[in-house]
Image 1 (spheres, helix red, strand yellow):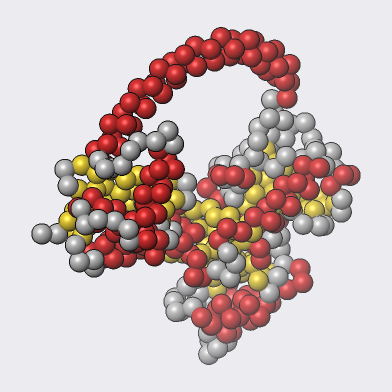
Image 2: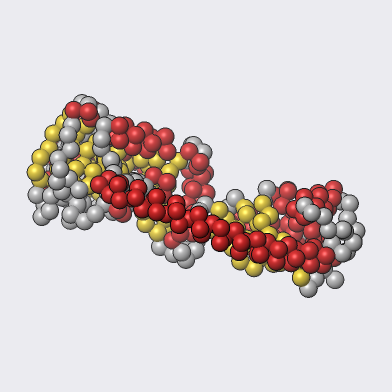
Amino acid sequence: MKLFVSLEKPHKWIITGSRKSVYETGIIENLENYRLPKNIHQVIGVAPGELVACHSAQIPGKKRRYAESALPYALEEKLTEDVENLHFKLLSWQPDGVALAVVVSRENLSHWISSFSMNGLRLDAIVADYFLLPQHPKGQVTISLGQDDRVFVRRGKYQGFTVDRAGFEFWLGSQDQPDLTFSVTDLDFARSLQNSLLPDDSSASLDRVGPVNHWKIGSDFTSWLKVDHLDTDVSAINILEGMFAPSHGNKFGNLGKVAGFVALLGIASALGVSMYENSVLSKRYNKVDAEMRTLFASYFPDEPYLDRPRSQVSNLISQAKAGHSTQSGFQVLLNAVATISLKYGATVDEVNYRDNSMTVLCKVRDLSSLDTIMQAFNGLDRVKAELLSSGARDGTITGRFRLTEKG
């Protein structure tokens, strides 16, 4: 069975089971007064929709993980807060198409998780309240009028919001699709919405006039879930992913003693393994050092090799940035890398020079920076550049360039 509970006070809750059965509902002011039934296998927090925003963006590409990495930057101009302070959940995306996502403050997520954890409740999922609205078979938009003039709106599978009456009227006036069909829970609200959409059709029946249906499903999620309590899992709309993914340590707490015993055995075996690895690494270090000396000699034939090659290479690059380089092909390309990366805020991870061409791996802020950097390279007098590959992983955009000297 599942427990759905609101994250803000007062905490409304409902327990649902299989085959559309509802076992219990209630409301409580303080979490410390609530005891979780033993047969609950999933606790789902219901977040106020005012704090969870839906957004859409056009994201090119073929792989979902790249779209997830690019999502914060694609939405950055639409947001009023720094992306570093926000958590993003990609709900739906088609390759080279529109991405639908929800955005929520990391501070709010941390507060909800910690407040429930302090009272012995581990949240397995968090969903926005408007995503619990059922979808009418003949309606594109479901609208429920809650307490204090809160309006819950769900449009399709992955779009929705919660606002006050004034905010809803503004949204309604901004819609450019007059043929949308609405399913409204409150009778008076349905009538006022109908009149605003069809002011000249006062004689028509309320049950189905134009785009408005009156649908009696209640004013909050404890009522909505009695109509449709999501027999399928909520993973598609679950906000708790990535760094906020729930830990399952408490669920398997009865294995703690076994884990501790295994850890002790692991420590003993690790000592022997460490000694062996130290011997292997020592041999590898000597091999790498010899290769480093050979590579350094090919890159810097006029420079003596020192015991601190990283510092030595850094000094040589600093000299190139300052313009203290000869006009050899290698140093022309190296000077170009130093100049362009510094100007456009790129981080250089790898530099390889072979057969009069230099391959450079750069980390940049967003995908558009790759084209900007390539154009900057080609704008130099003696440099020709091409982008070999690009990618994104864990929020980092990288690009691999090949530079050659013109003429």
